Image 1: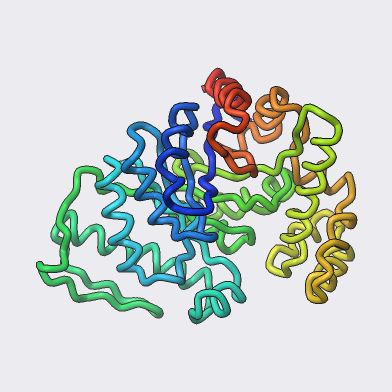
Image 2: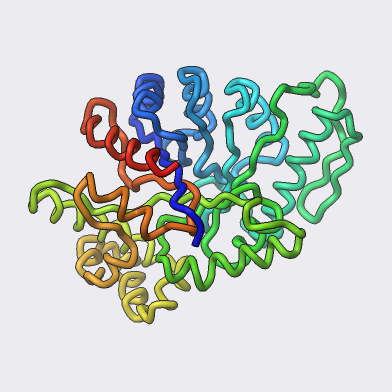
Length: 345
């Protein structure tokens, strides 16, 4: 199972980018190991740039940036600049998202996601190799062909060129790709320990074997659903919120294998139908206590660190609570949480 070594990260969740500098400084002061920016209401690369500029120690990265919303060259330039700006603290986290998000939110073509993301990763690394080592750019693939890099557009070498790429996924194909090519893997929040052991990790190990790599070559990170609160009313409200989040993910056919592994396929179908009909308030009650216990960790603020480390010992290298971190709100509780994790590092 390994040791109870686990990093504790947080996710930046803001209404506006002007909030990022103060929030990033507060997160670093509380001693989180990493700050992740997601592709939600803001561009995660802009958020990451602000984090880089206003912190000195904490790691930072995208969790995740939607790979197909940008070209490989765009991703390469963004990550290159952020690695330089942060003195090597940046991690490029890439995910595919789902078909509807790509086609209807970003207006991009959806095709063969595993094969296409493989090319994105390889093409990005080919560009980095050209910039750092002067290698002739000549990447030829099914989806991308890159062979033009005039000196005027070459940013040149940087001090920290080995930028980690973390791949996100749920289903076995993406897990295998992460094992084969990734430096890390973003485990989707919608997971259970049983799914990790029986589906995710075996697929990752297939990818590792295919590339002659070892388990230690890949770091796993995930956002963990938590149900917490000191008062009963607070815990009840938290449980309802988490049930709503679980129900939303479970209603998406892309994540069906997680529910089906546990024999919850009928519930998944009900949730999907309710989502189609827009009956969102009827969805959380379908998440039973058994399901809640499988997807979430419950306890007081001071109990959560030990419970999370016990559940994910030997499975994840770094975690974050699936809760927004807000500076000035519960700082003492967050501080105790990071101290608990660091006592085991």
